[in-house]
Amino acid sequence: MEIITFIAKKLLWLIPTFFGITVISFTVMHLAPGEPMALQANFNPKMTPEMRERLRRAYGLDKPLYVQYARWLKGLVTFDLGRSFSPDRRPVWDKIKERLPVTLLINCLSMLLIIVVSVPLGVAAAVRHNSPFDHITTVLVYLGYAAPSFWLALLAMILFGIKLEWLPISGLHSLMGYSAMSTMEKVMDWARHLVLPVTVSAVGGLAGLSRYMKSSMLEVLRQDYILTARAKGLPENRVIYRHALRNALLPLITILGLSVPGLIGGSVIFESLFAIPGVGQLMWSSVMARDYPVLMGNLVIVAVLTLLGNLLADIGYALADPRVRKGIEGEQ
Amino acid sequence: MKLLKELMKNPMSCTGLLFVVALALIAIFAKELSPYDPQAIDTYHILEAPSQSHLLGTDALGRDVLSRLIYGTRISLLVGIVAVGIATAIGTVLGAIAGFYGGVVDMVIMRLVDVMLCFPTIFLIMAVIAFLEPSIWNIMAVIGLTSWMGVARLVRAEFLSLRSRDFVLAARVIGASDWRILFGHILPNAIAPVIVAATLGVGSAILTESALSFLGIGVQPPTPSWGNMLTAGKDNIEIAWWLSVFPGLAILITVLAYNLLGEGLREVLDPRTKRS
Image (tube, rainbow over all chains, first blue to last red; front, side, top):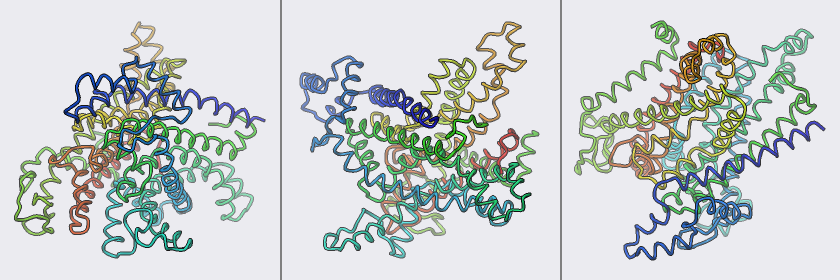
């Protein structure tokens, strides 16, 4: 039963946080000097003050701020984010909706890659603490942490795309002959296009998580129950993988939840670099075009996604940790 | 002095410190160190590979890459340090107030931190920058305003544990004002982790600036910044590898130096959080 209370509490907390997100998004856009209409109007020399006033009224910008906020919020909960300023005038939500799957796919894949690589790496470094292997991974972790991801992307494009010609460096699929491919070929084509973006966007997370995994594992290995397990004469493998790893993995769930905004933020760079039509690229092009409704919609949707990611992490933690599951107050 | 000695003992933090000092010197003496004027266009020598006369090659306008890298150090360090200064100031004040007063004040501030952490920083920055002139001052302010949350949490935790100590009680008994207790008595005891976080923060602020400049919404050309030099690298990716390799290397080295120094400071100043 306790777990239900726990989840209910987390769900209740979502409401104020969601309001916070909307208030901040709204404030950010309205505190910025010069309103969006002014920017648009400045590009049009024929704009008269009367026309500008009419436009302002049409977009509700003449109303007091709280009225504008209430109106915008009402639209938001029904997924009505207004229409894009760009010539196509499409609803913002449609634009975001069609781009979300690609961004989510890439982020999930790189998250998976991060887990699959950094958990064993961190464990191995902790078990062989202070060995040459440990030192080499430490150096790599520092490098991975400090290297700008878009630079790594450029280097990878030069090496694998241009010099070796192994992998394509732009788009989600081939432009030529894609429609004629069989399903299997299409999947392979996608995979080839996704290798570079997914790998490069995982580097930062890889460094962070393997480092975290290592210190978490070292911490666990110092605990009394590990000593007990060893004293019972259990084989070392069993101690490491059954007793220690399961405990060391727990904080990982939270860390993964916290890394969601970083990953989504990174998609701005990777999607514009690799020409992938996702949310990040939409964000970038809407900044360039000063497409204010799209910008605002993007900001809110992305923050809500992060919020949901954190919620999933909290629930995951609760399910995995018997102390929370059974409602026992842990030491933390 | 003792701190310096401790830092020099560890090979990692020693390297970090030396590089941080060297980079600061490069930024200060950029004019003296540059072999060419970083803005000088030379149409006879465009996109030349590294050679004797241009050690790191030239870009699409024939400008010397090495000189532009050296001047770029100024931009990166300036943005990194000022942005972190802003973030640290905001984070320290909010964290101190939250930790010291607790209750509703604490709850409101910490909720704000949670909400801010839901936004991918770069999205938030981009949303603000879309409506501002992309000047270096705006970039610094915006990076500072969107990266104070970590410091706030840290300072709050310190203040929570320090506020019930005897020296706080003593200060209160002699009639010190809240302001004075907060920043005159508790803060000096909580400063170590703040310094560590600020040093590490410089690295990530530099990364953020270079990413923004790379996307074309940060420092604008012709002012050389490592980020916008990499944009040129991308544009000439098929013919001029040196435009992509060197600016990134400069970012890597700088961020690494600050991170190493930060980790070193953590070990020296804050033995409790000693990491392996």
